[in-house]
Image 1 (tube, one colour):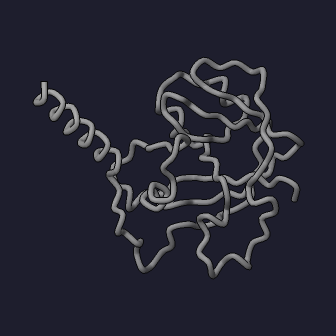
Image 2: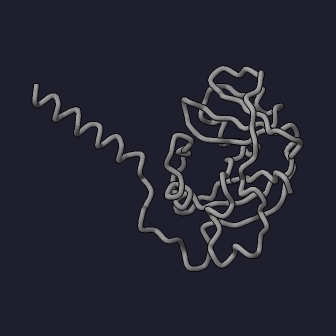
Length: 172
């Protein structure tokens, strides 16, 4: 019985470590940043979605959500964006003064009556369809995010990859 318990503990440790495949000591390359603000975009009929199966907080249009197929590949589509919780969480300190981000990403969402199997769907309260679009280094993203809403993208090299992340412009 004791050997089975030790085996189980060892298996759990190995499984939890495999998810932490990013480099905690990686600071990025000297010739680029870990986070860039790219543009301001509009998403028509945006909804926030969360998958209990895959994790993550995302922003998509309702039209795209209709194409959800309960597979992880849906979340890597070019029209599915990670939802950033606070722009200042990712910006370097020396860039704080360059951007005015009212409400610090604290937009109000309400649960919608829209039912999609395997997905929790929330609508933005108000009429915001504008978002700040950013690119975030995958390794940096993994270091900054590790919660229930965390999504581990299936990619080959976290240090060379960037994810698309959006921040709603609520109350601006």
